[in-house]
Image 1 (cartoon, helix red, strand yellow):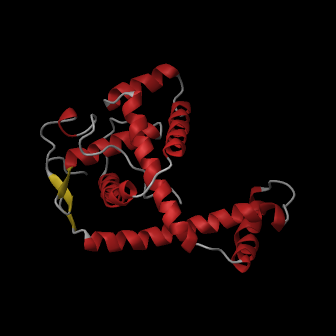
Image 2 (tube, rainbow, N blue to C red; image 1 turned 90 degrees about the vertical axis):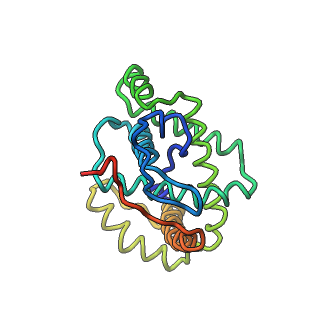
Image 3 (cartoon, rainbow, N blue to C red; image 1 turned 180 degrees about the horizontal axis):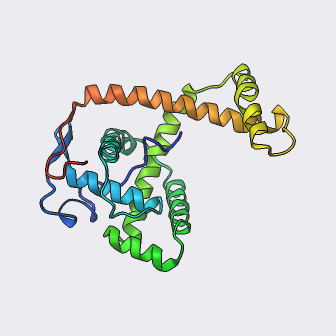
Length: 224
């Protein structure tokens, strides 16, 4: 599963959001059932996502960035209930979160730059890692639920090797083309992840209907 739709950030009540950012950014921009997602929650999500990617958090987000962050918060809300109801691999989730934390450190040029970005975020190491652990729990739940439905046929692997892997490898000029058996596992995982992403998108649309997701306009901090 790719991370495009499930790059979860802070919950609506975490230290870097709501009043911790601004008491004026309380406009409701979406609701999931009876739970509201506010504009300040979206801004907190944008800031956390940028921190994790090693980007400056204080650059004003554009409208597309706000929309993407709102969508991530909606997805986390929808999937969080299912993740909480299923047994999770706590040690595995914690280990994956710590790896992600260390990868985030490496995106900054110096330890001082990393610490400055963390202070700007308004969260400490334990709080960020806790958020990452919850993300990993959801990702694990999704993988366990959808992977059995994402089987890949040998013909699909062969077609990908012929139509995508081979021409892309030759275009890069990376040396001798590896035979299919050497990269079969890599290609299978790529195709499985694509199918999981498609199944997840379908599942999300179903959840949005059954759990009454409603979108509202951005207001107090209207993106440009």
